[in-house]
Image (tube, rainbow, N blue to C red):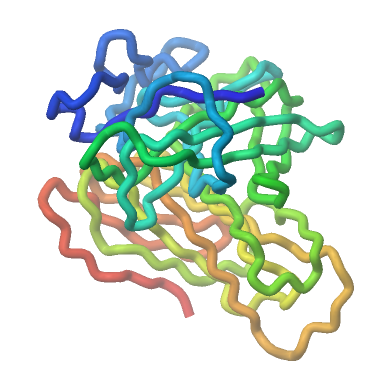
Length: 308
């Protein structure tokens, strides 16, 4: 099924160029509404940063892979609970280019084995003349899935996994963003599976020393001595209070190949949700940890790397 949602603006909303929906605006969802139990305290994670658009019919768009996916952000969609259909917010951008309200299209289908196929695209120039946003967003209307982890393919290739939690328990609804696996540059095997969450062998973490409040921080993790048959996979960052929990997954090659006696480095890129001011511990599951400062003034970051 095809889906398209209203895209949400950053600070340009205050300039009166358009009307949008953000946390705190009448009619917009509140961060606290994401808890099925109704007892979660709303967390103010500031302004979302995607350019807005209308909710008209989704045209046929040239294929374009999303750059990241996010759940539990203010005004966005919560993580999937139970067996019902859900919306998966997708973002194109945060690559140093300007975006101004382009249409992001998505068609989601569930295969017999429970995996999900997303066909995504990006259409034309946006309607907001002269605007420059870091990204644009859309939404995938995903049909109902069974409880558990499901492989997700983007435009035909394995990219990440989505987890559907069971109904009943009260989960903490932490904001989280996932960068999907890129297409392997050295396709040794031709067939891959995603490793379990928290890849062993990740030994290096790099990130800016500080970022501006409500910005998304770019992180890099790598396995310095991986297999020749593996490739960089997906990376999820979960904001758990003052901890950024980094959950990498490698693409593991499904073939029998005699690798040369050498180390093969696999680097994964990660991105955070918008972060309020504060000091955060960045912790890689099964790997190194560091500290990131989020400040209200203009940052002057240097790169911090922890590892061998």
